[in-house]
Image 1 (cartoon, one colour):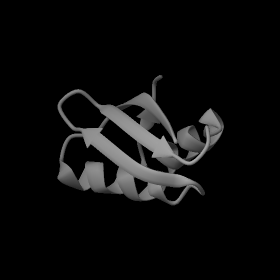
Image 2: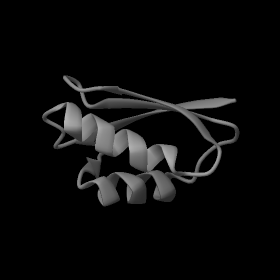
Image 3: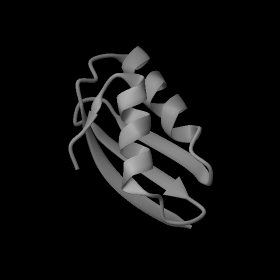
Image 4: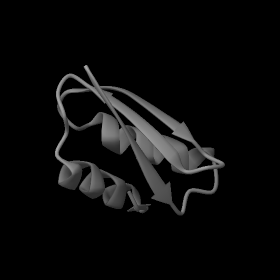
Length: 68
C-alpha cells in the first residue's frame, strides 16, 4: 500500500469533498481517500504509487485544482 498527501484548492463545502473523493476513488488501485475540508489536505491510499497526472486530472474533473 502507498499513501500520498495532496493539497486541493477551491473546496468550500461537503459537496466539494464528495466530488473530489468520488473522482479520485475512480482511479484504478485507489483504496481510500480522506479529505480535510478546512486545510484542503487530501490523503490517498492506493495499491501502488499513482501517476500524479491522473490525480490532477481527477481533481480537475471535480472542478478543483491540485496544488501539490
